[in-house]
Length: 362
Image (cartoon, rainbow, N blue to C red):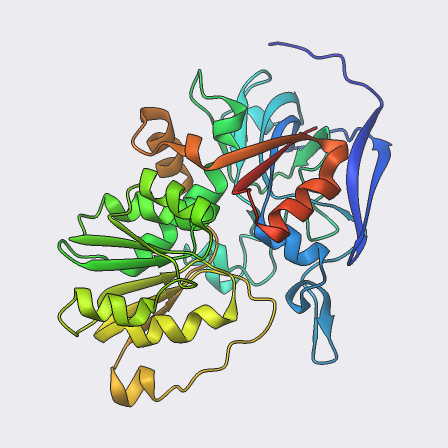
């Protein structure tokens, strides 16, 4: 088995509060029984990371509820890394060895609650999650521990860290498409052409829609959407996208609308452009609540409304699709920055003027 001489200290980006992230020097952790220590190769900057940094209530709470983030905590939940040390029994438990490249799901389920014991671990009541909960420091660091309960996947030989860092968001996109239950010949709209939306376009294309439409207000992202398989791209700043979709469908509307924007004002247009008995899938974290007339959902259209969360059972698919070239993620990664430039990375993701997926190199 390979052995690595590990340093005693490492750099890590630690979250203390909204707008208060600090690059610090921390001890390199040692893996306990069942745990895996990895040297982070690439770490992704998710839109949710930017929303957390800029103070979205979902992460910090308000007078009505607690927030999701528990500072101080090392940020980051998208990553790929090299196994450099194993705790007792970890090799047998996870099927990985020192020197393997791996990824892991962002959630660490408890394995004991109602959802875990029925196989629906991604909805675990007592879960941890990398980069947000105090007990599981995240990937914006040179090294990180994958706890014993982690869902870890060894990567195929030859897969680059740059590609592997997109596995997590692509797996999320695949789950959203599965929830959409797309049928052959459907007209499908994906709102948002960021990392998740582009992955959803590529995955939806595999389901055989008759027309696949991407909606985004940023022209550079629409160009990426075309490369990922969109048959038609629409800019809501330049045309009435609801009217256009209805026109293209003989006045009926689209069969499926998947929201990957992360913005509350995308909900109503989606409901309006769906046909009666259509399917709406929400995959996003909003910075503010969405308010709509629920009569549209029930009395007017009898819509199917599906939520989608995380990436249950889809990591193997994402790994396989990337490895075999079924889905080309090269158009998704636009920027790669050293760890110390995390403030610039967060700003780029927040402003979304030229970036799609931004990666950090610890």
